[in-house]
Structure formats: structure tokens, C-alpha cells
Image (tube, rainbow over all chains, first blue to last red; front, side, top):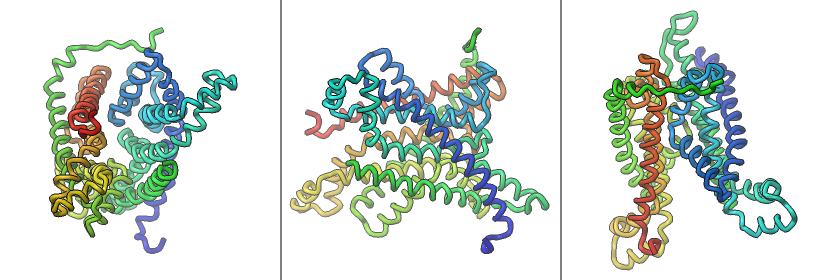
Length: 228
Length: 226
């Protein structure tokens, strides 16, 4: 990378090795958590039993309604004040906040996908002797998953982008790593170079996020067209 | 043992109410500017995209892709911490409304483009057959029909705009979230602060989503209202 100025190489390496890695960690945990919680909740939402539906609705509307930053503050500041055992480090707190928000999105999408499966599929599965759980796990959800794929790819893009809010509580993700490097470079030598390099560094952060998001949004659009 | 021992000290509201209301007012102020801006941007660029106006359409596509594929928090950092390096210094208030306007405008361009493109071609052809020009056809045919189709998704964008104003915490603009965090740092009344903060946002957001249903009913196209 000889075309880059001397200061740029260690900055870029730190952003990719520490920052990008943290971003992908948060995104992976949050996506897995969102699916684990969201798919069952969304499926249960299709049962016409008022109390369970009202509870799941409340869960969805609260975590979709709050700005994710506020949810992050609830997890990071409010939970430990309720019980000291509910204190998590910044990376885990961010993953929890994103999981709450993501699972609400997944639940809503799953409900739509499950309800779009024709009722003959339910009847055929019942006729084969499947109970409610077997019917949904083996017959309905595998078909619903196909329709769920485009919104899930969009959700992944959203989760990756929204994971930047972890910067606010100092979790080591891409934006935080960039901010640390801007501050380090502003320090006098030998630590930094005594110059502010905020413009190229934050521009680079935008470029990295674009390179991750753009192919994924294209993929989501392509999947949507193919399924339509 | 008690896992959640919660008490809510109601005097918190009387003691910090004025400050919180001032924060809420700034949140609504920034949101109002951004919603108006996003509406105009979405309308103009959405029309240019849908009708493939040369140059403008391509530039709009680039704008939309850049904004939608980068996190808004990074855009805020870029505006507030990056631009001063090349001599552009913006006030926190300016960055606050500008960032959410640019962001909302990009999403709204897509909303309106989709709405205008959903208007059947034969409607526009009917307009031309009646002797309307391109602009008159757009104003009298495409806009009233496509605008209504785009309405629910554009209100969803406005809801996201309001929620995104909370990110102005990183530039210390004293809107609702920043105000609440400052009060928390002084009073240490964590339960009261964050409950009030969360409830305030839910009231705003839930009111706006309820308005989608009202507006949809009132503005439904005659043939859908049956």
C-alpha cells in the first residue's frame, strides 16, 4: 500500500482488525438472537388466542417503537441499576439491544410469511397426523422461510449499520475504532502525528460500510424479484 | 428475593419537567424541519427517478444508494467531525436537522419513486390524450394517485426520522435523549430518567403510526374505499 501516506496503514489495519471484527461480532450475535426469538414469536402470533397475541404485540411495538439508541441506554444504564447482576460489557449490551429490536422485526415478518402459506398446507399436514408443533416446524416454517429470506437480508444490512450505535458506549466496533485513531493521530509524536485526519478516516468508514451494504441490498432486491 | 425492586419517584417529573419539555420541543423542531425537507426532496427526486429525467435521475440514484448503504451515525460523524477539517464548520443544530433531512430525503425518494411507478401507464396516456403536457399530467394524474400509494411508506420514513434525532446525542445537541442523559448524570435517578425517556418516544411513535391508518382511510382512492 505504497500509494497511501505513512500514517494511513496502521490506522486502516486497526480499523479492519479491531473495528470491523467487532462490528461483525455484534452483527452475528444480534442476527442469531433475532432469529431465535423472532421466528417463534412470529409463529405464535398467528394463534388466535388473545392474551398471548396481546403480549407478543406489545413486545413488537415497544422494541420497534423505541429508537435503538434508547434501547441501548435501557440495557446499558437501566438494567444494572435494577439488579447488579444485569451488568454487561459494551459489546454484549449492544448485541442485546440490537437483538430486542431485530427480533421484533423478525417476528412481524415471520407472522406475515406464516400467514401467507395456504391453509391446505395446514390441513394436509394435520391429515398426516402432525400436531401443531410438528406441522409448523416441518411443513409451514420451511415454506415460510423462503418468503422470509429477502426481508432477512435487509434486516442484516440494517443490523450491521445500526451496530454503529455501540460506539456511543465505547464498544470496539468500526466507528469507535475510527474515532480512536482520529484522536490518536491528533496527539503529538511519537504517539500521533499532531494532525487531525477526521475527514479521510470517517470517509473510509463510509466506504467500508458501503462495500458491505451495497452487495447485500442488491441481493435482497434480487431475491425479492425471484420470489415474486 | 426481589429481582426487580422498582420504585418511581414522581417528584422527578415536577423537578425536571421543564428541562425535559425543552428537550422534547427541540426533538419535535428538528423532526418537523427534517420531515418537511424529506417530503420536498422525496417528491422532486422521486418524480425525476420515476420519469427517468436525464442526469437528475442518475444523480438521485447515486445519492440514494450512498445514504441508504451507510449508517446514519457515520454520516453524522462525517458532517460534524469530518467536515471541519476541510473548513466547513457546522453548528450542532445545523448538523441535527441537516443529517436527518438528507437521510429522510433519500428514503423518501425511493418511497415516492415506487408510488409514482405504481400508477398504471394508461392513466398517464389518458392525460396526454386529453391534451395535458408532461408537467400537467404529473400534477393532475400521477401525483394525486402515486402520492397516495407512497403515503404509508413515507410516514414510516418520517417515524424513523423522529427516532433518528436521538442520535444527535453524539454531537451533544440538547434534544430529548441528550437532555435525559444529562439529567441522569446529575440526579442519578436512572429508573425515572429512562422510563420517562422511553415512554416519551413510544407516545410520539405510536401516535404517528396510528395516524397512518387514519390518513390511509381518509385519502384512500375512491375505488379502494368501497
